[in-house]
Image 1 (cartoon, rainbow, N blue to C red):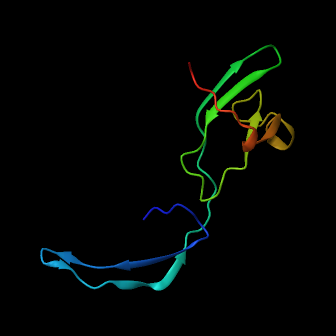
Image 2: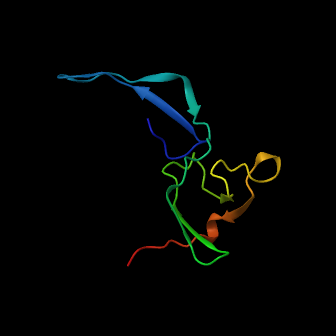
Image 3: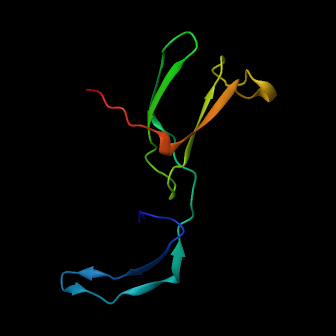
Length: 109
């Protein structure tokens, strides 16, 4: 069963059906369950292109699954190494956190 939101109690019941009709419903045990919030899936269709010697344009589409909560931010990491270990503590050279509210959809015309 795919639900639209997490942290909300859901009630489940099941009935058997045959050619004569539907039988009585039986409630699940436990009677109510909550779907656990999860981290979102990865953004899709990531595209990067240089704008100048010091700027890169990065575009993407939102994840297919938001994990049951609205996406609030995107973390964008950058590095000169494809392993993203060129910065301090074997991490990326840098990163920015971008509010999802500030994201402007771009469509091809």
